[in-house]
Length: 213
Image (cartoon, rainbow, N blue to C red; front, side):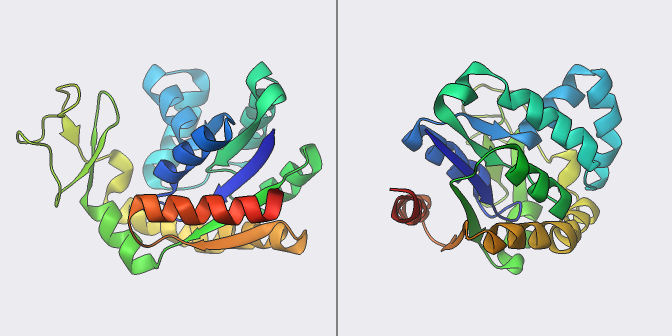
């Protein structure tokens, strides 16, 4: 069992790498972003409450996020196999609460320059049906029709320049200090996020194994 937290600005490749790490270690991948978007799409009470925050790029209140995470930790797969957290914690309050809720083996910070992140997010396009990610530089074969499922490939509502700027500002203001909480506990390692995905994965696994084996 392993309990990992993966940090990185949106657009740093954190989502892809967290899925790969989850498979490598056999730990459930817990993406708060996916959980929130599903709730919004389904129109649940929680989703309606979260929608305004998500579309503006703002962070949800700590009490809402902590409730979602605590509930997820009660599931059998987490109890048996641990977890890889993607998108949580995002504030100092969430980080301190997480450390108090459950032991953490390691927090990994995937480092990518902000300019690279801005370029990636601005060009990102996503299949509205299956979630496959494309970009303006690497579009689907047929004009904005998903190669995987035939769904419409669109720009996410939270990938507008205004929302991207708001997210990056929120990350610097709120999440960077949260990362420092794990450093204070001796639980943080930073990994270069530039390069081919397979090279980044190798660096992440090597850094994780070096600290947890």
